[in-house]
Length: 182
Image: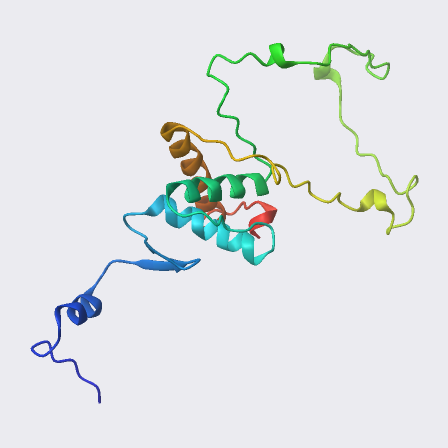
C-alpha cells in the first residue's frame, strides 16, 4: 500500500500532489486552462485540426505564434481577416462587377407568391458516382500569404474569434459543429 507522508515531502512534491489547477500539454506547451483559456481553446482547436491533417502549428514562439495559430485555424475553416480595413468600410467601393443581368426565369416580382419546389437531379445526372455529386476540394487560402504584423488590439480580436470558434466546435454541449471539427 502506497502512502504519502507530508512531513518528508518537498514543497514541489506538495504542490504537485495538491494542485487543483487544470493544466494541459498541447504541442509541447503547458497551458493553464483556468488562466490561459483563450490559448487553451486555440491550441485545442489546432490540435483537432492537425490530427485531421487540416492545419499545422506555427513554428514561432510567443504571442505572435498564438496569433499565427489563430489565423491558421480561421483559414482552415475559410475565414480570412484583413486588419487593414476600417470600421467605415463600404463594400460598394470595392465592387468590381457592375454588370446587371436580368433573370428571365423571374416573372413574378412579388416573392411572397412564389413557392419553392424540390428539383431532382437524377434525370440529368443518373450516375451516382458522377462528379456532380462529389464535393469540390476545399481551397486552402493564405497558405503562401506573407506574414503581416497586426496591432495588439487586432491580435487580441483574432485570438478571441479563433478561441470562440474552437470552444463552440469542441464543447459537446453545442450540437452544431463545423465539418473540420467533426
